[in-house]
Image 1 (cartoon, one colour):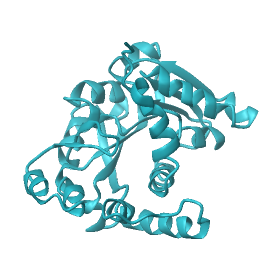
Image 2 (cartoon, rainbow, N blue to C red):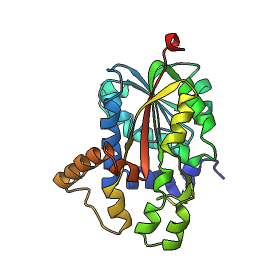
Image 3 (cartoon, rainbow, N blue to C red):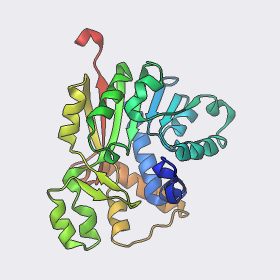
Image 4 (cartoon, rainbow, N blue to C red):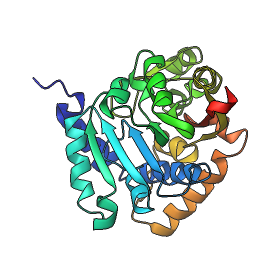
Length: 269
């Protein structure tokens, strides 16, 4: 039996070819990309994408001129990444390195290399405790570099069961930090305040936090279908989601949040 959970029941295929092919998947990639560009140094800066899956977030950065290392523990996910990598232009493909390793051993896997930006999107929720991985993210970041973490918003955990009219589950979710995610896998959520304190205690000062999904999330879980082939509608949806991600109270209601921080310079210590 495989030790790779993403190989079971073709979970990697469902995630890459299903979730990311939806309007919600496009919004996630677009909104995060725009948020990242507000903070990343100019290319050819180095980027480490921890738990980067099939490269949906980091491959566009390679195309924009960044030097990308994608690290993932799943052979099935890395196979998907290799397939998608072949679709990139030669110049962008040469800027991508794939590494199979657990995120909690990232520093060893990259042989102590320090990166201008370290990304970790949608990974913390699969771990019982976030501290070991956050340690590695901060450690792998160069002085003055950017740390980007996307994770579930514990303060909005009642949204999904309520929209699905699972009222008992929604009531219990107000004080819960776990739920079954869209792929049927149990997940854990965090708060902006707790995650900010975790990074701050490791020398990374939070700069800003954003929401990621809001209206597309609500529409999906209320049963509405969005057509990913309707390009004008998708673009309009993404524009609204980007604006909502930056504003209160909308970002506070997002089931997922994106925290960006900067590692202190040695002179600041």
